[in-house]
Length: 127
Ligand SMILES: [Zn+2]
Picture 1 (cartoon, rainbow, N blue to C red):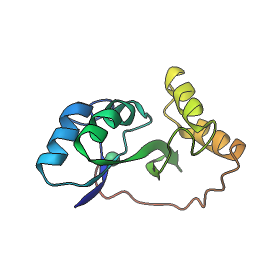
Picture 2 (spheres, rainbow, N blue to C red):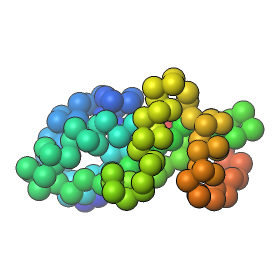
Picture 3 (cartoon, rainbow, N blue to C red):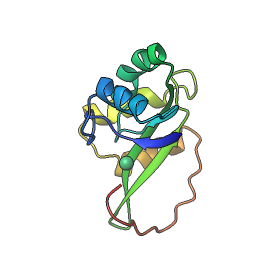
Picture 4 (cartoon, rainbow, N blue to C red):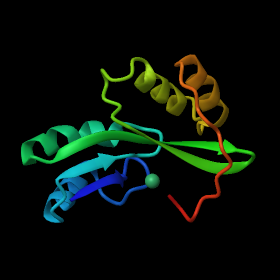
């Protein structure tokens, strides 16, 4: 079983990274994506624990942003430290400055050479 969208208490999840790893294993999950909001802290804490238990962990993030005054959450995956140079530092910088991502994300993604096809999207409930 695979779950590619989970949160720890490093963002708005209920479980600590250690508890999430334990719960995932208990539930029979073999691959778990941790996509905390605007942080990699949960993934980083969970990784050594996941390795010990044989759980394959996918490094993800849920970036909070806005489009036309609507809240939009962008999911990103496979963002290991060596996977996208500078991205983690940029996310850390956003959090330290207390920004929620909105305009910073737009500027920063351009600086990283990412082209984002912005589309208006109505969110169906909390994500
Ligand atoms: Zn989410």
